[in-house]
Image 1 (cartoon, rainbow, N blue to C red):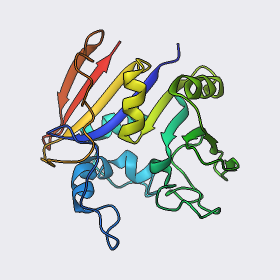
Image 2: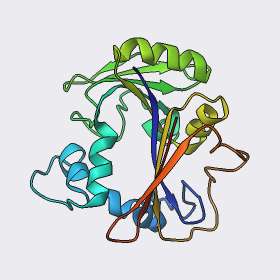
Image 3: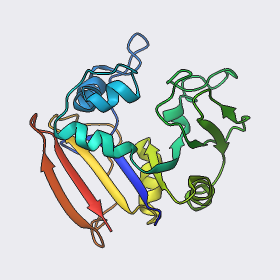
Length: 213
């Protein structure tokens, strides 16, 4: 049975974005700190960086690998795809180059129409102006019975959480304090009701929290 899934990295105080970006460092030092445990995993190194045989293999890697298992389609926001940074570049194909980590249909939510992009690795980016419910219907059809991942960013994830459309929420809580940014849980009081919760600590102090229906 198809499930709708979320996997995000958040800080100890619940923030899923950072605010220290500069033109010289568009991701910022805080972002590197937030995602460092995930980036260090063997799964990330192989799936995103295309470097085999490197990376950590502990608890963080177990969840990183599960992040990709059984996914048939993905939904993401314009910011995650990079349209906020390159709004006028018709040749922009995302941050990942020709070899993406997806290899399945990806639906990008944007109010700016763009033609679909077919990547050499089998990924197809389609650009939609749609509600969470309508976008999920499109993605579920493309997933052919596999799961749909709501990839991010946190604003898009919150819209799907608010609409009650997510079956499984996994957050890797990195033990750092950011103090500002987009707070994943703001306005979602009582979200945990209706979910079962589990937790597992990684060797480096990252806490993996999972809420499942």
